[in-house]
Length: 225
Length: 114
Ligand SMILES: [Zn+2]
Image 1 (tube, each protein chain N blue to C red):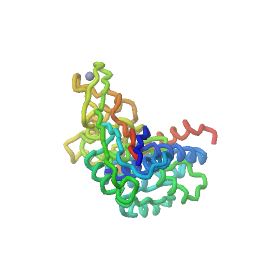
Image 2 (image 1 turned 135 degrees about the vertical axis):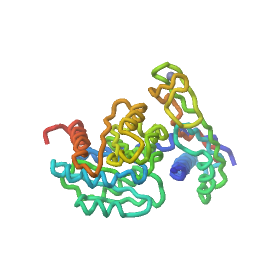
Image 3 (image 1 turned 180 degrees about the vertical axis):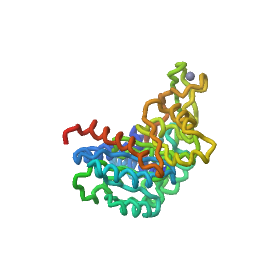
Image 4 (image 1 turned 90 degrees about the vertical axis):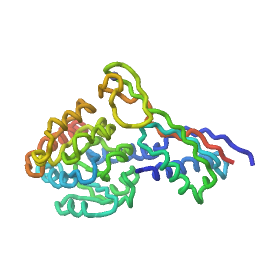
């Protein structure tokens, strides 16, 4: 048998990127601002969605949620109770979502006039940052209980996130840390993206993030709707 | 970790390439992995050995070229290299205002097939 030396020169994740670009075209044809939420497990992604989707609804920005989970459907059940259209992806142990999973999940939605699609990625700070899904923005979520040194340990996500949410800030008085400690660490890596402090104890704390989402929507799809 | 997904992509892409070149068996796969690609190369190698069974790559050897992460410091202008993705801190002036010049790549370079 003749041996063949075959030059390949193909990025390993090129297919995922292509499928992500394809997803983005679909999202834009439906006028959906798409947000990829990335955090550690237990950082409060589901609580965040439970709290902001009603506010967004009131402002005429109803949303869709794709919920990524390694094994359970519990988060999706929580979201569904809020009357938000939610599709669950069970990754069966895989630590991140991929573009083709998003495409399949998205086909299950009966889309009316929703304006925002949230993708709640699998709880993990490393792998999801490497897989583009076709989103417009990556949002990093960090809870104060994880400690202020998290961004330095996972710099890529915090460097690339277009917005960073610091959650559970009502617990700061019980920790040996202040909000300035967190902001300082995040700012080392990311000078410009907004940092919003939120807590489920203070529903008003979500408004700045909601405003940011609405501004993003208008900057992509224009004001006149 | 996402090593299994990476291996699946390697298998899919190289199989396609081999078929296009009328080959039926892949003997070697050469890839390049940057230190900033967030991949454990040991895990990648073991995942490869488990997953290649019953594919065209059954007898294939995986050669991994590791390349360092190169950080360009915007504060002092120096370039530093690291074999790990630990921090974005410039080791010379300790500034975090750095950009990644290279070292995030994950690439299939070539295959040897028959
Ligand atoms: Zn420097």
